[in-house]
Length: 301
Ligand SMILES: Nc1nc2c(ncn2[C@@H]2O[C@H](COP(=O)(O)OP(=O)(O)OP(=O)(O)O)[C@@H](O)[C@H]2O)c(=O)[nH]1
Image (cartoon, rainbow, N blue to C red):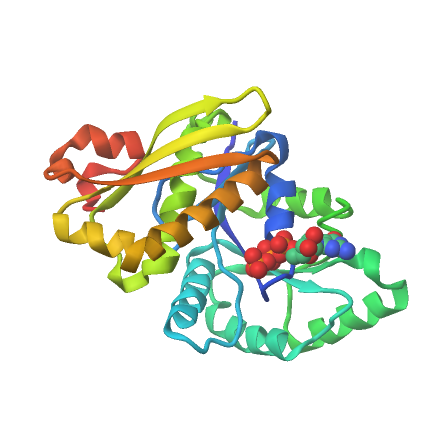
């Protein structure tokens, strides 16, 4: 049996439909995986199995013209994710065509093109007529030599199987990057913890205490269909607590709101999220804590 596996980055302007497409591609066998493997700059968003191929999708924030420092960091992260990937799929919106933002991405693509395959996916085809699509396909391919062009509707599912099959055939021959049982049922708790961690990262950016971890402490199903989720944010030093809480608790409030909204969207149900910040000195030394988080103790993460 020849197995294949590879990293795939979906890039595009904000709102292009990256999350919608990702959710569709990971489909039933999805999982959001909470640990970092191999890529240093990008985090793993999901893993899909297609035949004997394992497709590992890396997280890439939308690419846009950065203004603030945080924006710049996000755009750099998106390009970092693309540069680490085996295959890059540029997602654009059919009805918007070659926007200024798309132009900018096309310029950036030249720099990372070496050593990786780049495909184009024109999304939201449900919004335009066929001649528009043909003209757009031509225009884009005149600007950049894409290996393939897919016409898709991430929302309606059109063309998504074709894209996934192509990706499965094109990722390199390789052992799987994740054991199958790990991707089958990663507990929702870990996913939720990762969502909170992500919001903290976005919010705190460089201020983020580097030795910080989030654990879901309790998950309680409620009769009305909602769930109460209790999470603890562990920091190493007392001084870090204040950073996470923010002035008058505003940081943690904003993080909690953003994380809750993401959990609700992901689960399609109401979530009551309760966050606590605790100091746990010495947790960095506990190797089992690392393996619990899926991190490799050796690599100094
Ligand atoms: N009509 C139509 N709408 C779509 C399609 N795919 C996605 N959308 C909509 O486009 C919007 C943006 O989709 P997202 O998946 O959130 O886009 P994104 O690229 O992940 O956005 P960012 O997270 O901001 O980078 C949502 O309202 C989707 O419902 C499609 O195929 N057709």
